[in-house]
Length: 231
Image 1 (cartoon, rainbow, N blue to C red):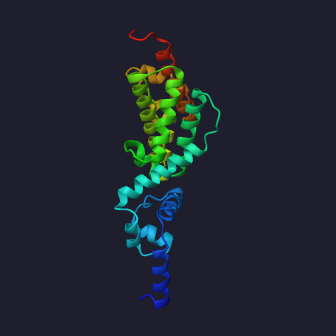
Image 2: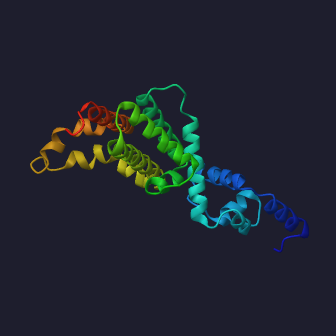
Image 3: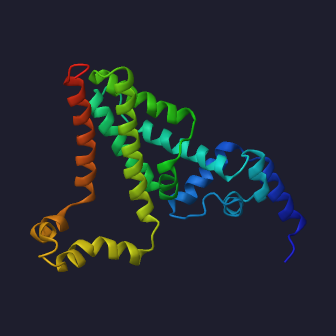
């Protein structure tokens, strides 16, 4: 059915009033609802009540929008980190906040596991991690390598967890039950270690894995900082 002149006028006014911030906020609202189409101009147009093509007045393409939305998400994580923490606590807080926002906006968190925003909040994250490893006692190439180790590991883990939420409920349920089903039925002669620890494997939680991963990263920094240079 053709739009009335009044409807067209409302759409035109909404489009002319769009800002990059409003578009980013709309993308995050869609992403928070678990939708995978947070970056389609059609879906954004519906969310904003505007002509979808109006999005391109502010963003060159969907990829530029994705990077901008992801950087905003990083800012949300950073804003959750309290002031006055020592380097270990800052890294733990960054890890927790990064996971929280990735699970809040899974389509964004999963996409950013292998991307870089090249924007201000990403720079703030890099500055935080570099400051932490330097406070721990690392400098030069060692500081750079350990920053990458921490950053890339966190991106990979939170991205994996976010991507899992995008699977349908049946697929998630099948994966989550595997330790109590398929892994308990393996041939003990071929897989004695799995059989010997089947009960313990089924009891491991995502929280335990994440905490162990973060503590391992911190321990690696501490160990390297305590090792004489050149050793």
